Image (cartoon, rainbow, N blue to C red; front, side, top):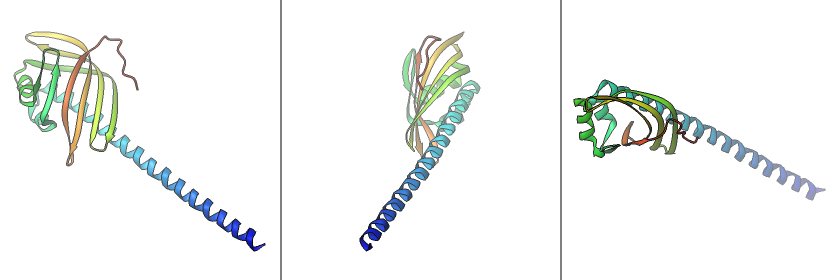
Length: 165
């Protein structure tokens, strides 16, 4: 009879341990999901703000957002932060309105995020108003408390283009 009791107690201990580990894993994954959701919202909001700052030609806010080593890939070339800010400030390219149709965010760790947005961009380029369909890829890295834009790439697409979620 003692042997059966011992096995039963041992079985209860193992089940309790398994239950506690399971609860711990559920709580941990819920926290991770909540943190990822907060980061995703923060990056989406920052991207929308960026489009508005570009439309407003607010180079001061953009200078704070753009990483010093950032790159910008456009249909006509690729350049660095200073050139992008100059283009925005002078109106060489005036990003009048970015109509965002879809957004996908991929979080690689708590400090690195890629955002893709499908947009119709109304812009003023070299004296002409133009409208183009793009998927824009934005790479962000967290430095201290701030997110920095590392790369902004415009890929010309058809209006039927979709971003896979």
